[in-house]
Image 1: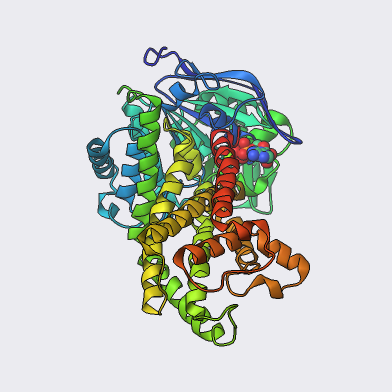
Image 2: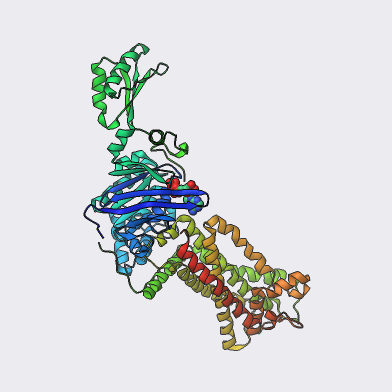
Length: 332
Length: 271
Ligand SMILES: Nc1ncnc2c1ncn2[C@@H]1O[C@H](COP(=O)(O)OP(=O)(O)O)[C@@H](O)[C@H]1O
Ligand SMILES: [Mg+2]
């Protein structure tokens, strides 16, 4: 098995899984390089959780093959389980136990032995800033703290691959940032992380590679930059007077350089144009507009939303628009 | 870091089971309410059934109603034990704890075995409390140490069997809400029996059900072993004529069905 030479550490080949009428996975192919964060991006119902459950040996694929750290998830599931951590969509904790007790029990179930399980629990609580709440019942934890404890529960034996299924869905921005920092710290330690998310923003922040998944197959993949370049973003400019709209449109057309005609919205005195989002920085845009004599009162570069990604990639809007806005909080 | 070494199957399974068991017992520590409830249940039932109903219900062959009642209360407490494992397992399922367990290198059967072992210990504790309450209100075991221990052993066997039923139902229930809806079904099981009243006053169909209800056999078995009043007489259904054998048989039958079912369920759920 290869774990540290930049080889593929999670590989899926043509995985299919059907639940009754629903084809949850319809031939999923995936190759995750070791030592990276890999983002599986897709809307609700795309098959993200099912894919993670296949890798974590919880669900058996109908067809296809998957390996984790070189071991087959069906035939060598025991070996796989010794090398992975899983933090699912919900905080899988015992609410009637303290944070420390939760970790100790998990430690014992990872066969660390009582003393080592205790030491490891203390170590993790200290390192991930939960020591202050270690002896409180999990029932009293905030949503963010639960997620963090859940995440570190999956780190008891320093997994080779960590699967995080929508680790920040439903969290407030501050808690989300804490989780992001934790994930970054893990990769610095050499853990490979496969995370699923509905937020392009999150994948962008954390992942070196992204696979966009819809109705059970990968419809695009690459680095965030590659992906955004194919999808592009938009520049929005609001001018102080309707008279300045034409001038702003001309300036934007030059800036964007995509040959596309900018959209002009006289009611809101707004001009917007699609751009390859990674090619421009806000100061450059402002300088350029200023140079062209455009009197802008508001300028913004908008990252593409997941809806736009979908529109571009599939020609149809994402089905569940309710929960697909980037950065939007969803109730659990 | 290298993954922990795999120890031999049985030892791993045993230590995993112990970990799951201690997890359940630890929870009790944080739930004084639960412990109070464990104490309160026998006390309240002895007072409620013993004194409120007891004054109005005649006992076949005469005798003290509270002496008649205690064996049934022991059995009722035991059968209600199904709620414990049902709720815990269903809750873990709903929260995704089961998924985490199943993604770990632990023995998957450790969950049902550990759970039922914890249930058994808790049940033994509540039996002691129940017996103390009974003694306080005038109940006595009249047939000596051997028969008395035999009676408690039989109860624990029944409790262990019932606990496996709870584990299986909990695994089916998938979350706490469903479990809460399944739970009350236990009431008719205890009520359509001879715990509170003799069955010969019931309509024929109901009486047949009550006579073949394992709860009835267990109650008669305890009355016999404790030497408490109210043993049924006359032309008896087989389980009531051989109550100890029937109770043990029912328990073993439940175990033979629900142990393999549960273990299989924990190995393969979601696959
Ligand atoms: N156990 C299951 N039984 C029935 N349908 C399921 C089950 N798990 C997932 N599905 C269905 O499969 C599809 C993919 O689900 P999922 O993998 O959970 O998507 P995602 O995590 O991307 O939101 C959905 O349509 C979902 O309803
Ligand atoms: Mg999901």
